[in-house]
Picture 1: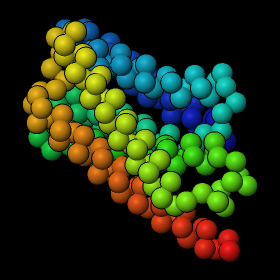
Picture 2 (picture 1 turned 90 degrees about the vertical axis):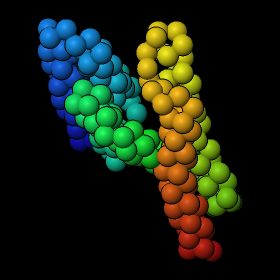
Picture 3 (picture 1 turned 180 degrees about the horizontal axis):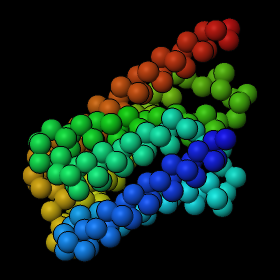
Amino acid sequence: MNRKFVIFISLLYVIFMGIMAFYHFQTEEMKKAWVGVGGVVCGAIPLLLALFTKLKFNLPIIISYFIFLFGSQYLGTIRGWYGLGWWDTFVHFISGGILAFTAVALYERLIHRKAGAGISPWFVFLFTFGFAGLGGVLWEVYEFSCDQFFGTTMQGGGNSDTMTDLIADVVGGLVIAIYSGIRTKLKLKKGK
């Protein structure tokens, strides 16, 4: 069931962004066209994983991923919501939370079940928070690199934009990291 849903939602997004890319290439709006191509690539990642691996998908993360893609690629760039001023910060806050939830899912899959009882809630907090922060930093490195090497304007506000984005990523990750640490502590108390 999960795999079929992931295939369906991925195909839906890939087709939608393919249509956006085709339309904007026709109207010679190249920035929007290339965002459409990027949407096809980003939407295809879960599709390819579903088709060619035996991964078990965490549906809330997959759904959050596509909501994030839709908000950043379609609403943000193609529809121009980044011009609202606050949209970019909001999207970074959400992405920090999504990255933190991804860290929790990775932690739960990678940690040996018997070791879980001995794991400190502080470790879960730091792992989750660090993962979200690193994801935000890597994204800003990507934006900076694109601006330097390809002449894009992804860091439209320069240092101020970068720092605002990083703060939003960190705050989004912090909220989920605190929740994860408390949840782990409560689980440990129940287990005793």
